[in-house]
Image 1 (tube, rainbow, N blue to C red):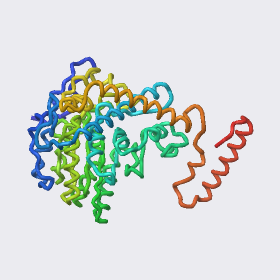
Image 2: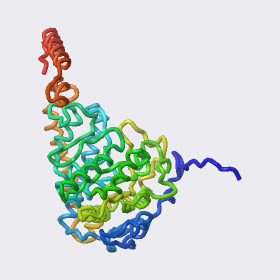
Image 3: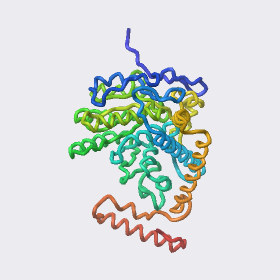
Length: 420
């Protein structure tokens, strides 16, 4: 028999009935929780099963239940809703031509919010472009995020980054890169440096499952394993890398989490739409890293409910109604159901929170455009392009800066419009 080239299959295309039979789901509460000091071999089974806490009725089950109090649960729900409402507002602004580009995290909010809540404030975060929940959980203001999208005079990136590529040195969040997977080796390097300095802080990085096909992913795993770096490497398996099904990145025959034990790093496969499971798994991995037991690779099984970005139309490559049939549900609805089952939430409180957050986001937008919009108001000083690269600006850039200043003065004289 001659070898045959195998091409991964896509379970459903536009017009087909959604098919998630390939998603291996474990019952809530059935997966054992080993000690964070467990050997890598003892985590191998956790990389193939699915760690879950919340069952279909909203009850928390099993040994992975982190036992969060009602205030923490309400905070988590509020942060996920704030992220979703912010996303929805920015999507609308883009469609109205008020910002140029946007990427929502619709359906994936728990992956960022619960993880950030489980980590310490001084742990260093290396996000991907769909982790806005990390910024909001760490306390970065809506106005600051909006100003980055507008590239206005309050833009944290000074107009040098694409929209959505935020950062916050104050909040220990590394700059997002449009070059996929670079954050993984950077996080491992930061973690190695922290260990050398004797610090207890860990690093955590996120990427989509499509990026796991990049060489940087494998380089990061190797260094994390060899040097036992205190790092958490998060692969967000939302089933689609732009328009490419996760099977093309290698997720069809083995889990992405299984790559961890394969190279000597602990691996967990976790229900990414279960707020409690995300919190618990992140806390477990952080405890393991802080105690010197090494890195953890976590695969978050979730679903990208919206488009990849405002430049994408997912109805061209997958069934329109897929999210409604995703077997792991909606992370916001699941945490809401849990709080209601505990008697600490109800529909009235939920609608009041949504209304309050919508007003908060609308007010933040009014504040943000006071610093300039795409079409009017003050603009960034174009001379910023010559700064923050060299300690002492070299002569050729000084000459270019002077030439720019002259040209701007001439334009201002001709148009009567004052240049920055």
